[in-house]
Image 1 (cartoon, rainbow, N blue to C red):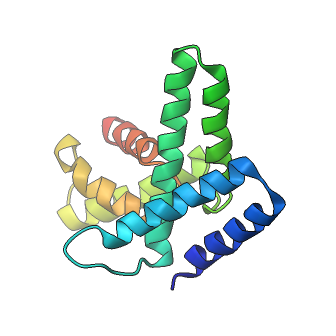
Image 2 (image 1 turned 45 degrees about the horizontal axis):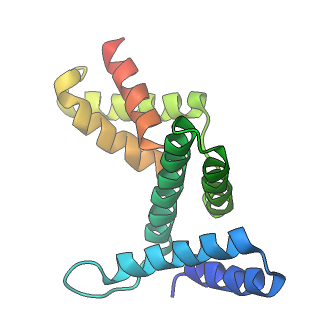
Length: 156
């Protein structure tokens, strides 16, 4: 079993004993999302730690989007609950890269694609640059930030 999933389950038990309501609900939701991902598709399988991290990152993004929606609708209490859940899940994710680090990794990916093509990539090759950049970033930055950096590099 994935080490991260074991850690989530152990932390769930701890939260249950400590009666930490928000943490308990968040960890239950996260484990349910992991289980859903495991049984999705034609055949049940066990997720690796990297796949569990992707599920957790997706859940954090959902919580942040929901918080924005609740804030926009004037439901500050519900928005704060969503942000609290996102904070609990963020503790399990790797350290996020800052903008300078993302830009440096995009530059490396750009150089790799340039070497492959024999010329500087344009807007049409954005997918190739994104693929190379995402491989380097490896979940340590949101896709939207990476895409923005790639667009800026291609434009400039």
